[in-house]
Image 1: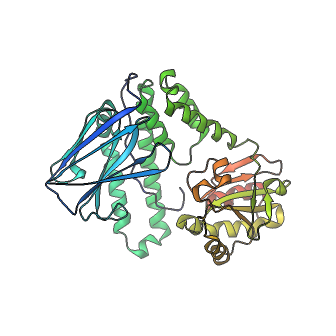
Image 2 (image 1 turned 90 degrees about the horizontal axis):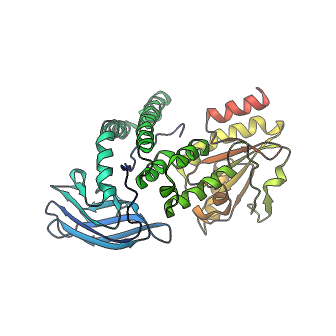
Image 3 (image 1 turned 135 degrees about the vertical axis):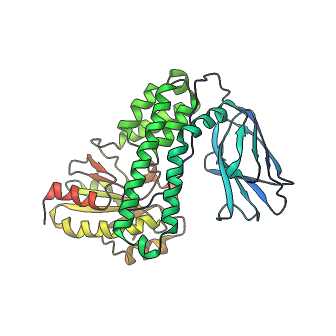
Length: 382
C-alpha cells in the first residue's frame, strides 16, 4: 500500500506435489518448548469451520502442551505462547505459523517458538522446505520492520524516511512473490500451491494476475473444497475488475435516507471504503478531501462506504465531521460483513473504486498521488 509502512511478515506456504492428501479428519498437535509452566499459555489461532477467527488455548506444563480437533479441510494457523497467559493481543508473545492437517503434528523448540521446528504431515514438511528458500528475503523483511520500529517519531513523520522504507518494502514483496510463483509453477498438483497463491495475491488481489495462475493448477487441486471456494472468489473479483460494470447497491446515509450508486450516474464517483476505527483510512482522508475539493465542480464526487461496527453511528458521524468529509456517506454498521463491502469483495481498507459516468470501473485502489494523477489525467489541471 502506498503512503504507509506495511507489516512485512507473511505466512510461508508452499508444497511439492502430493495430490493424495486427506482433506478432512482429525489432527493432533503436540508441543514441547523449553520448560515453561503456568501462568504461560499456548494459543492456536485459525479460521473455524463456520468462518471467522477461532482461538483455542491450553495450559503449558514443563514446556509441554497438546491440541486436538477436526478439520473440514487443511488450515493455515498460528501457534502462540504468552508467558503471562494474558491472551494474544499483546506484544509479550512468541509465535510460529503452521498447518493443521489430518495428522499428528509436533512442534519442538529448545527455548521458544522462534526456534521451534514443525514436523508431521506432508504440508508442514514441504512448508519447511520453502521456509529455507525464503529465509534470505524473510530476514530482510524482519530487518526492515526493526528499522521502522527503532525510528524516532520525527523520522516516522519524515516523507523521505517513509518513502525510502516503502521502496524497500515494495522491492522485498516483489522478491517474495517471485519465489511463491516459482514454486506454484513447479508444483501444479500441490494443495499448498493454492495456499501460496492466496498468500502472494494478498488482501487486494488483481484478478488478471490471479486467475491465470489458478487455472495453471491441476484439476485435482481446483476441484478441492478450497479450490472451489477460491474459484468463487475469483468470479466475484471479476465483477469488480477494471472495465466491468460496477455492481449497483443501496444503503442508508447519515440521515437514514436510502442512497444508490445509480444516483450518481453521469459523474465520476469514487466509491471509498473506510471506517472511523481504521487508522490508515483516517490518514488517507486528507488526500481524498483534497481531490474532492479540487475536482467536485468538474463532474467528480465521492461516495463513502463505512465498515463501522454495530452501534458505532456516533463514532462514524464524529469521524466524518473531524475529517471534513463533506460528500455522501453510507453504512449498514455490519463491520466486515457490510453488504457493499461483500458485494465488492473488500477484504482490506482503505480501498476504493473509481467509476465512470457510464457506470464502468475505471480504476481501483487509488491512494495519495495516484488518485491525484488519475484525476488530472481525466480532468486536466485545475
